[in-house]
Length: 169
Image (cartoon, rainbow, N blue to C red; front, top):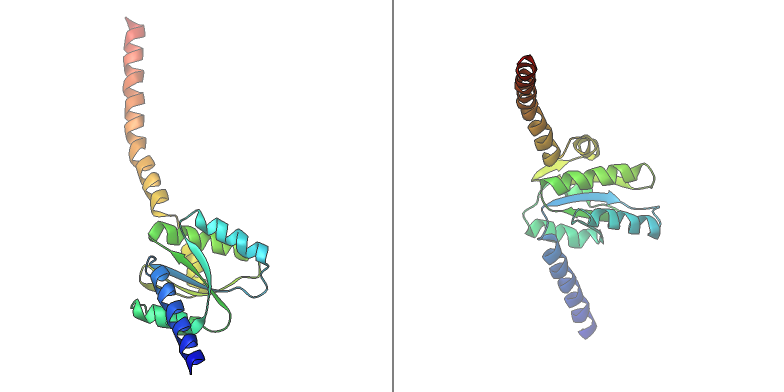
């Protein structure tokens, strides 16, 4: 009996620890890592750390309990078989992490099962499409470049007029 109590307490502690970690993130990308080498998983983890994200191999039953406690929905069919979860925080990190995982899929036997990003459920195809979108910062930079172009042209035109007038005198 004492053994079963310790075993049950171990599970409770494991779920509590996982919930503490998962609650810091708002994006979850579920992957099947079968066939990946330790070196490949280590490389992926270091790539994701650049975006303040993490990559964790999880027990499906524990992950289901934790995600239910965090009021996430629609993940149940994703947590089947060997599962690792990429944890992301924020829209920009979610986009960057999805780009990293999709790029990593080309060289490693990683398979995306689905994702919960920014409160939305994604399947594999939707995640791949999402990864092709520019990040918010890239969009802002593009917008600022577009907005600055007419002002730069006006400034060059006015300067050319001043230079032409100075030469004429």
